[in-house]
Amino acid sequence: MVTITTEGSRIVLDAPYHPDMPKRARALGGRFDSVSKTWSFDSRDEERVRAMARDIYGTDGSTAVELVTVRVNLDIYPHERQTMFFAGRKIAHRPGRDYSVRLGDGVVVVEGGFTGSGGSMKNPALSPKDGTVLEIRDLPRTAVEAEQARYGGIEIVEESGPSVEELLAERERLLARLAEIDRLLPEPEGVETSTREAAQALGVSVRTVQRWAQAGKVQARKDDRGRWIVTITVPDSGRDGDAQE
Image 1: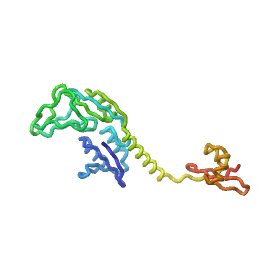
Image 2: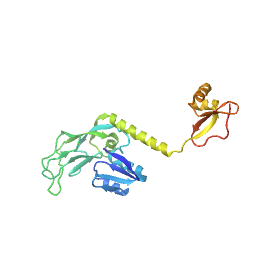
Image 3: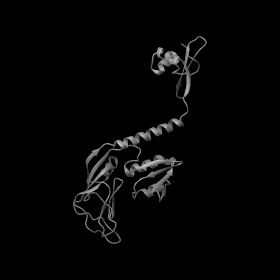
Image 4: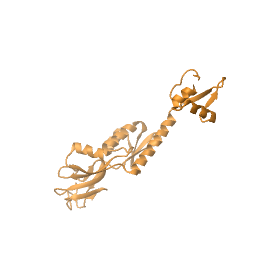
């Protein structure tokens, strides 16, 4: 899971370990917190940090993503000696030469397997058997497609849309962002208009505007001739003068 949050003048990236992360994070001025296992960056670099996360993990956590299940043929797809990463996730790891291979969450062996030991004491290796195929579930489609563009041996076998929880979380993030934008924007300027112009701007009838003015549902006053002058809000600058009916 990848999340990016704001803490004062810093943004914090919480993501699983990936061998590409330390070098790229430090190039963006990132600081690693060994307690929380997170990276923090200057908030002015947020877009760069999000782009880095999308490149490594296939998502920056800001939007619900389409997930897929894939099968990876290790006879074709390259794998590290001791640890294998795929689409931003740690897939398999052998702690030592004579240790069994440990699979990551959502990973199963559908064909073949791994030898009981692999590599040397100094350099353990996964050592998959010939014909080994791993099934890896719940990966971001974008990350999988990036792997497919670079390597063979990858087959998408199942697809699923974003979960309800992810959609609700994204909705909350968007609402929070909209509220933040509203706070930063200047207050709209009020402009006095005739009931006819107010009706056109609001998409209602003149009579409706008059009823709203009478009931106090819109900001309005009467001029010295007894005609309603209605105040409506418009972005940026208003107009000069008062138009009257």
